[in-house]
Length: 285
Image (tube, rainbow, N blue to C red):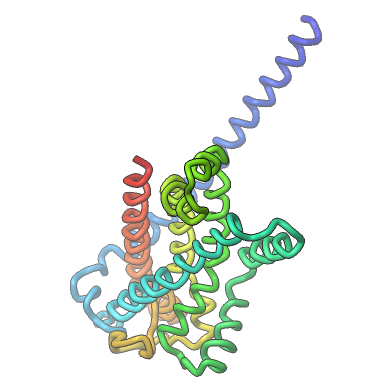
C-alpha cells in the first residue's frame, strides 16, 4: 500500500469513527428525551381534561387548572412577537444594508452577539429597573412582553443578518442596474428570498420566549392568578410560572398537575412552531 492509499484509508477510518460518535450522541440525546417525555406523560396524561384546561389555579389540586397561565402565555407571546419581530428585522436591515462597515458597525455587531448570550435573569433585572420602576408599568403583561422582546431581539437580528448575507450580491447589482432604489431592492428581492431563513430565526426566538421563566419572576409576574388579562396593564402569569409553583409544593397531586401543565406547554409550543414552519415552507415555494 503506497502512502497515498494509506492516507486515504486513515481519513476514511476517521470519517467512519466520527459518524459513529455523532450517531451515538444523537441516540443518547433521543433516549434521554424519550425517557423524560414518557415520565411526564405517565404522570400528567390522566390529569388533562376539560376541567383542567378551563379552571383557574386553586389550593385544591383536583380543582386547579391552567387557563390563566395559558391565556397569559398566549397574550405575552403575541405582544412580544409584535414588538420584537419588526424592530429586530428593521435593525438587521439597517445594519446589513445601510450601516457603514467601520469600527462603530463592528462594535455594534460584537455587542449584539454578546447580548444573545447574556443570561435571561439579567434581562429580568433590566426589565425590573427600566419598565417596572422607571416607566411605571408595574407588574403588567406589557412590562413582561417588553422584557421578553429585549431577550429575543438579538437572536432575531443575528438570524436576519445572516439570511440577508446569504442572498447573492448579483441580485442586488441586477436590481440597481435596472434603476431600483436600495429600499425597492430590499423589499422586492432581498426580503422575499431571505424570508424563510428569517422565519427560522423567529421560530427559535419565540420558542425561547415561551419557555423562559426567570425574567418574568424577576419583574414580579404572579404565581397565583384567578383572572384573565383584560388589557396591557393587567397583572398576569404564564404557564412555566404556574408549573414552577406546582412543582414547589410537596403534594403529589400538584406534581401531577405540573406534569399535565408541561404537556400542554409542549403542545402550545409545537402548535406555534408548526404555524411558523408552515409559513416558512409556503414562502420557500
